[in-house]
Length: 72
Image (cartoon, rainbow, N blue to C red):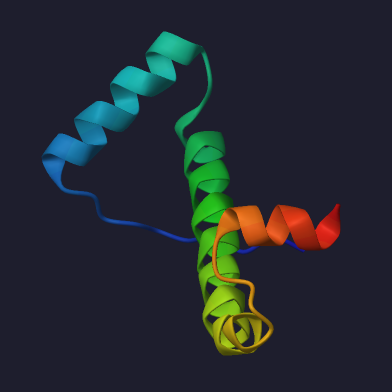
């Protein structure tokens, strides 16, 4: 099932979206859906990272290098 969402964009953002759609040959709806999907994924990632940060520090995992060492 799909839901239709009407979004009001500032003129400058709308113009940029139009330009990108024309330049890439994609429709605006697909660009907005992809962008929203990325935003939602990044938001979930940040929330998970925030929740696990204290546990990681307690385990001595502080840097990306520590993560790579732990999973290697």
